[in-house]
Amino acid sequence: MIIGEGKPIKDILFMIQNYSKVIVAGCRGCVTVCSAGGEKEVEVLSSALAMARENEDKPLEIKEVTLERQCDPEYLEQMRSYIDEYEAVVSIACGAGIQFMAEKYPKIPICPGINTNFIGVTEEQGVWSERCQACGNCKLHMTGGICPIARCSKSILNGPCGGSADGKCEIDPEVPCAWQLIIDNLKEQGRLDQLEVIIPLNDWTTSRDGGPRKIIREDLKL
Amino acid sequence: MTSDSRLEKVLAQGEFAVTSECGPPRGVDPDSIRDKGELLKDSVDVVNITDNQTSVVRMSSLSACVILKQLGIDPVLQMVTRDRNRIAIQSDILGAAALGFNNILCLSGDHQKFGDHGAAKNVYDLDSIHLIQTVKHMRDEGKFLGGDELKGVPRLFIGAAANPFADPFEFRVTRLAKKVAAGAQFIQTQCIFNIERFKTWMEQVRERGLHEKVHILGGVTPMKSIGMAKYMKNMVPGMDVPDELIERIKGVDKEKRAQEGIKIAIETIQQLKEIEGIHGVHIMAIEWEEMVPKIAEAAGLLPRPQVN
Ligand code: SF4
Image 1 (cartoon, rainbow over the protein chains, first blue to last red):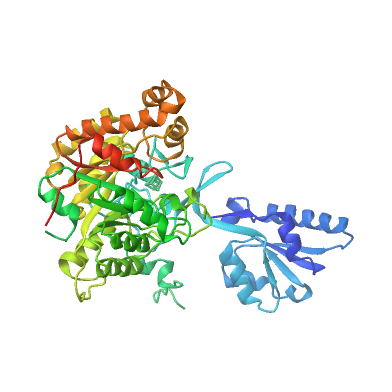
Image 2: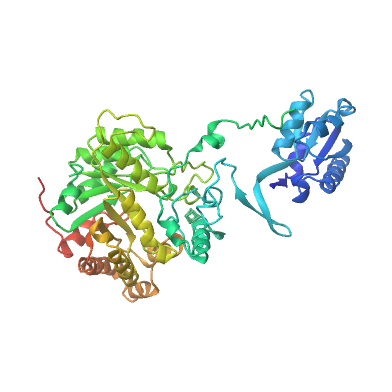
């Protein structure tokens, strides 16, 4: 899923300093699961903002809403009836949701209330880590199910580099070396011969380098 | 011969090669390169110019190579894939050949986190193995990676690095084999302080017959002080500095420690000369270039052979 993290409250207060009526909008998708932008976070953020503004003697009127998904037009449409009564929206959906909101309601300023960090997994309660860079050309069958593009600090396709030490990456002793993980996995499966193969230079056209991406499925279009 | 490289010729003559390196300045002064070049000139076969090593911004390797070339030195252009995509890399390769450079060392480079511009975006369009393939492809196929024909090919002697001390140890030789398969013709290793571990690595190299396919030059760095030894041990990624070595330097009087470091370097070279498959040494005297002639002399590596 997409993992995000709340922005510092002072940054959000700065973004909305000139408004007195705002909507705080959450999303029930990924950001609910990673506790960054769901109904609970909408509540917590709203009361924090209200309290801070109270203290500044600049009261803030807030409407709290949590949509099923902010990346789907049908749910965004639910805000149409009341959005004009407000001066700004603080969205705590992922970057896609925030932008879709801005696109559907171009007249009202949208302020991002969270940072969108990565596509990742829940390692354990309260711990998330990155797994995928959405390069659009999956090679996980060659690399023991571990993605060197997302998880090697240098995205090296033929690692490990000379900085790998004790299973950790040269950038930080807390970061596992992706290539050590790949080797461990292939060893476990008796497929070490895979490491003799030079993975050729990558074609990045399917990645963001090829320009903004779009998928059209004719079979699904209405 | 694949190039006009002095190093390629020395190695082809079966001579024990000596290479060294210098880091370009953090400013515009060409004299600092000239001074280092003059110190190294008659004691080594070629001189590497590092490419923004440890991700600290310096004068470009390409420009510093020009300055060395003007002194009559055959430079080795180091190139990392951290800062350039395949377009810039191929373009610089063409430029290097046009300027008369004969050698290139293909590296991935240290992560930008180590340098003074940690906020930079890294590129890594290619890895070091792809860079080796790229140079070879341009030279031997006469084509760009995109498929178009080159108008004139870069005749470059292709080098790569190997770190026998990084993990996982059992995989380091496999990675060397991949570099050789990609087209590496010479290898300069990471600084060798743990000679026993290096010997074990070389055994594995010989088991795979790699010592007959590529020229391996052992990396040697003289330690200036205890501080430097500790720094190398703890701060430099993939460096193996055994405690005994630190103890040995500690064991002598403070003013004699640099001398002890030089002595260790000379002993290391002598041991390297005895290892089957080692075809030379790469002396990295970091900001201590004046020691290189002394080390080379004491290790019996001078005078350097003539080549045609
Ligand atoms: S240490 Fe491992 S993860 Fe880190 S850059 Fe090198 S190969 Fe990649």
